[in-house]
Length: 287
Image 1 (cartoon, one colour):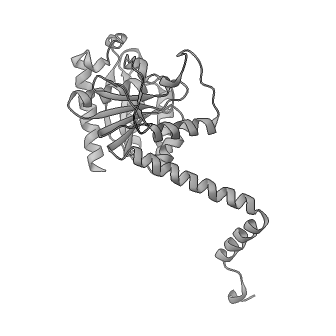
Image 2 (tube, rainbow, N blue to C red):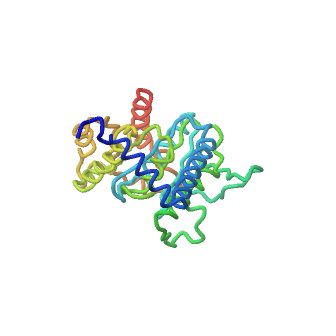
Image 3 (cartoon, rainbow, N blue to C red):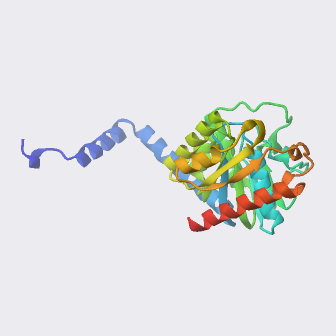
C-alpha cells in the first residue's frame, strides 16, 4: 500500500472519538459535564485565593517527621517578622494544626457565606479539625470524599490578602496531596525529612512525585536533627537530587511546651527557622 492510501495516526484518533460518541452519547455528555464542573471548581478556587501572593506546600513522604511542626513554626516566624501569613491544614486523616497552634476559636461565616479563618499568633488558620465533632474520632473517607472536601474548603474560605499561605499536606503520594497539586497553582514545596534512612527514602519519593507534576521543590528541611537520630539525611537528599538544603532543626526539649509554637518560646529555635525562612524565600524569588 502507498503512504497516500494509508490512514494517518490522527485519523485513527478522530475515528475512535467519533465512534465512542456515536456508541455512547450518554457517556460522552457525562464526560463533558464533568470537565465543565472541574473547570468551574478550579475557577472558583483561583478566585477565592486571588489575594494570596505565594502558596507554599509543606510535605513529606511519611508521617511522624514533624511536617506540621515545621509548617506551623515556619509560618509563625514569617508572621512574627511582619508578613501576612495563613496556614491551611489539609491533612484529612490527622489534622493537627489547630492543636499545635493551641487554637480554640472557630471560623466565622461572612455575608458572602464564605468562612473567615480565625487568627492566632498573627496567623490565619483553616483546618479540617474545625469540622470534627470529636478530636479523637477517626475520619474514614475514600478518595472521592477527600477530593470533594478539599475542593469545598478551598472554595469556601475567604483568606483576604496574604503574602504567604502555607499548606500542611498529609504524608504519602495518594489522593489528598495529589488533589492539591492538581487543583492549586502552587509556588513550591518544602519537603521535610528526619535523619533516619527510611525517612530519607520516603522524602525522595515525595520529591519525585512533586517533580512528575511539574511543581517546584524549594528545598529540603531536616527535622529532629542530632542526638540519637543522627544527622545528614537532608543534606544528602539535597545533594543527590540537586536541591537547596534549607537547614536542620535540632531535636530539643523546648518542643514539649505546647502553649505556643516553639519559635515563639525559644530564641535558638527562632534562629533556626529564620535561617530556613530566608533560604526558602530566596529560592522562591529565584524560581
